Image 1: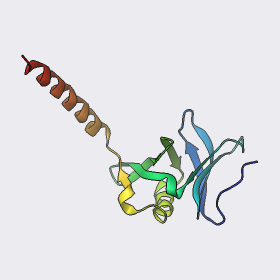
Image 2 (image 1 turned 180 degrees about the vertical axis):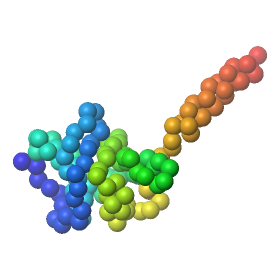
Image 3 (image 1 turned 120 degrees about the vertical axis):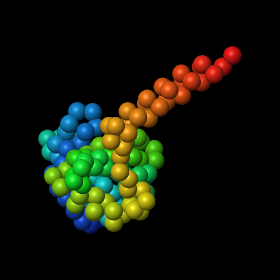
Image 4 (image 1 turned 30 degrees about the vertical axis):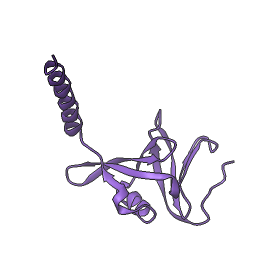
Length: 130
């Protein structure tokens, strides 16, 4: 059985982990870590201590609706989650992560624009050489 790192639970909700296949379970936010536990297999869990957080990026749609968020760690990459109430979850995370580390992720058009821009730079860089 998985052992929680938290000594005090501040917020808990149903969630989906989008790390690989979608896995349904529960998110627990406590005084020591952000934790996700699989509802079908308690041994399948994700525990991220607050000092391992690099930043959090949230996908914000028009109308300030948050569809999902990603937690980027210093060592182990990133983990994507969606909860029943993403705003409340991020408010609870904000108690432990500085506000400058909570970011709005780029939308589809911004990412596509960066890609087109880099293609343009690559073409002009090749044409400009002799």
